[in-house]
Length: 261
Image: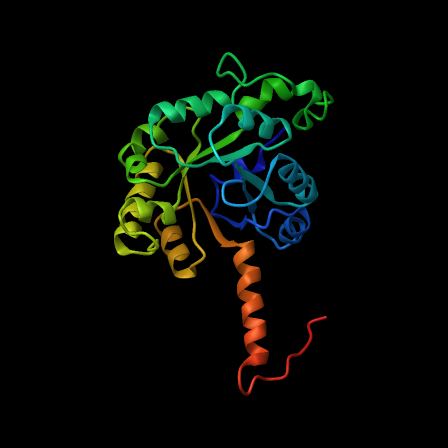
């Protein structure tokens, strides 16, 4: 098993799409669009283990990496995600070094961790057809921790410095709420806090990423040194396009719509 995402992210900035529609058909459409990665969001969408499996299968034929965000840092769920073939994980709401160490251990086979061994019946090891899986899995997993609170920022250096943590992802929406700026992810204080955090992560030799549907903010964080950027959300793309389409026809003087079929 070779993790191309883990390799490529140190060489160039990678661009991705956040998947919140919880559907394998729309995931495959997104996989064909040319993104470097797709983020399967299990925290704020009605996704479950079987849905994630279907999405992983749907996009496997395309040259795009899959990152999976579970709803919690539950070691049992992390084990299941790894077994069905997720090798890039984004774990939300990480605030302490002890929590980060526990998460790292949950993704590693012994003696480096406590991940349960079930590769013989796991998709990740091709149901036993990959004889090298157990000896290579620990190295090939890319573990990204999401820091999205003031407490997490306060402990950022110790969290990011832990061996086995490949990078840190910054959630501006939750961070703004934690800073007393609910609903203001683009507030100058939030932007400045993330700028400083990106510099800290890079200084430790780790990768930094973020999500923003605002192009100006995205370009700013990329210029600040972010290695990977989720630059849109599938649900918002559909929602915005749907509203624009109906507005085009209902607005006075709307031009005749030309079909794209």
